[in-house]
Length: 36
Image (tube, rainbow, N blue to C red; front, side):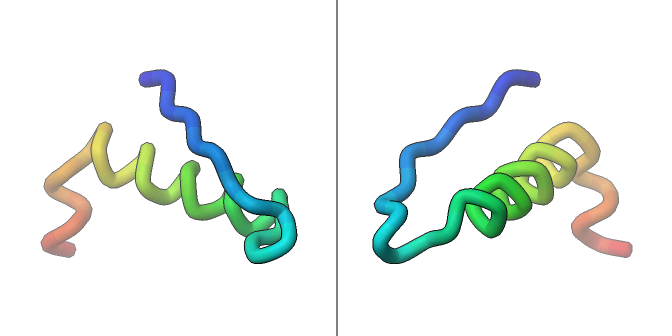
């Protein structure tokens, strides 16, 4: 799955934004993990 985002780097560090996108991607690919 491809997932992208746009962040204002004055507010969100690029590493933190990328980490959030990876976690959201993982949850969307495996929705059963939300309930574990």
